Image 1 (cartoon, rainbow, N blue to C red):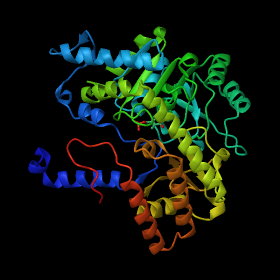
Image 2: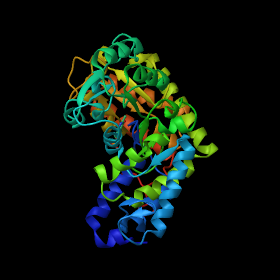
Image 3: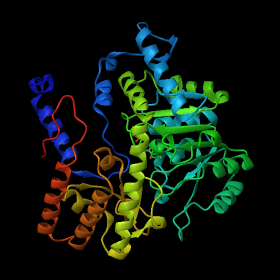
Image 4: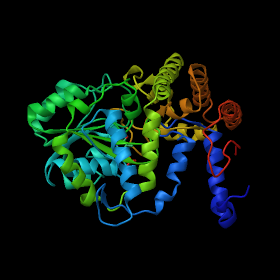
Length: 422
Ligand SMILES: *Cc1c(COP(=O)(O)O)cnc(C)c1O
């Protein structure tokens, strides 16, 4: 059947088809990516994209909201139940806006924030120098221990006492270990700072009970909805009842206009999916796969930051392999293995050409891969490292990777059949 997109815009149809083929025909190891279900995809591509809904349920600025009010209330209730939070705001357009919303709710411009340094695994929006979060706020950062690659809470407490931040951010974008949010909460209390916890990467592990939730220990919890949570691209904020009004006002009218109702609708669907035993099993398998992949990489002599992983991601320090991160990521991409180059703690090289590679298992686990496939992927990575300048060896891995992909289908796409490989 010819779709409307195919008929009206063959150029964009063809590019979208190619991307669908790329997604099914490659081993996607970027830890912040996933495959949404067909149900989430349908909600995201629904008529809700046509509706403006500035405001909140019962308090909108345009008419015609009897359906959108119900949808948003469902999404809020599901978020509150899933994360055991007093209040949920499901409107932020993304994780970055959610973070800005959390800061705007709690502190004033010119106040001081303290987050994890980007080069050590923190996110841009945790006060990194090129982010507006370091321009609107004074920013001071904490590192991980260069020896262990782990958070050093004595050091973080000392830095907090010295720099007196108004707000401390816990959470990371490239940290392979479980984060103790309770200690962050204690440090924040000791210095009279608010505690914002950003679980963008690990939200799926938190709802599955694999990692401890920061909700009891943070003033506001921020998340994306599209990483391990496996929803559409979006953001959300969770908080205690006492901060509900400030959080809502910070998101709208503070930062945003109308929420993306199609996304919000798809977030509701993703949260219903996440509230099932199947999702818990999925999240457990994500971690098992990451551990299997890490163990095999260690056998091949790779250095892993912190020595391994407790979550869905692995950070490889490539310095002993004498291959720069970017060169390896590009060779892997030619071998149908999609990763991202990344800094490692204390990296002497710049973020544009760093010494590390970041990989993760959320997407391969969604397509049903388990420990044997994770180990096979480690073998592929090792072969590419050993043959970094050998295009025919890279080509051979690409063939084997495609064969592996062909045994694990991805969730169906409702516009474009995407199990055709490129
Ligand atoms: C991905 C991520 C974000 C930002 O999410 P976007 O949706 O890309 O804006 C924020 N914080 C952390 C820790 C992240 O990993």
